[in-house]
Length: 181
View (tube, rainbow, N blue to C red):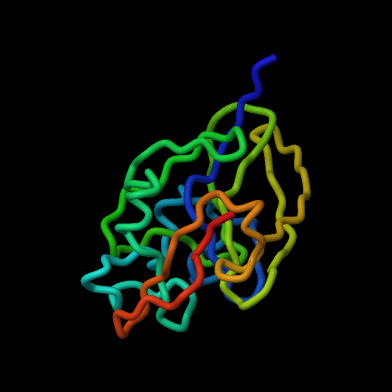
């Protein structure tokens, strides 16, 4: 039996808690309308090594290196297979909004399948998590709980990609990897 996976193809960064229902911080009326994930991008996770201050993934100025991502095969628009799920890395240049900071947004996902895959990481210094709900076209609903390790301190054994360094505003490359799960 072939397993089809419908995927949210971007990183969901969470500064304090990850909550998926998955609108940028907007008026309450706007929150009720599910939007495609790309329209919700409100954070910059990837920077060029020559312009590390163009992104701030974690709220402290650190970001993923576009060069290191490319070396790992994670280039803009590329379809990646992560734990059996086909995910498309955002088609964005370094320094452009490329991910969503989870804040209860409603995300419209289309397709057919028997699973929904998320590519997530926390940026709070430790694991983060929160509840979510899938609403199907027929009105049915399924609740879930999503958790994610911290992008710098989470276990390497469960990572989707590990990078040799992260970029900082000063251009320095602190030791330790940046990861996405």
